[in-house]
Length: 208
Image (cartoon, rainbow, N blue to C red):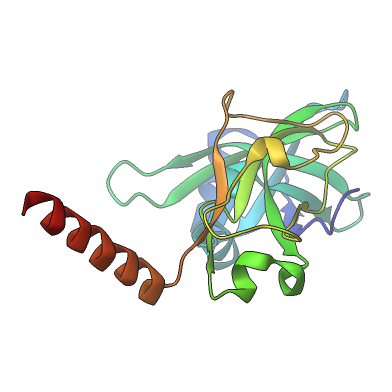
């Protein structure tokens, strides 16, 4: 089920239009608008440094947020656009969309690996190489999985773990419409080097 949804703090913006937006920027605020969900659009402001930190954290456009505005009920939102200054690249406006529980969105869901102590390949010195620590899924806003789980029990050196090996929660599907690799269990370097030496010796013997 849904994991913890990060908060996004905003302030009510009084007034609309370019004048109010310019005034917000003079006060070191970034204006924004919250729309959708069968409700009227709500003008808001974000503290400049706070928003910059959120943007730098990454995946701002693909993260479901719990929007908190003083005096109003919290609401789930996702960012649909961040307008930026053409010269400085700094944010000048943010568009947020309210989501119903039945809305479908694309989100990155973390992958967790369990039973490493029961993994044959790791016991024999292999290494788990994670290709995708997160997987982008199309999910229902009301049914967001906290994580995807990969069971390593019985996995051997050379095994490749693909998306089809993971049981996805009901109502979710990958945004990539093909098989793709999540992780590999690779041989230890010493074993790989020994195999290479053996192949070399076999090649030399065949040439002689």
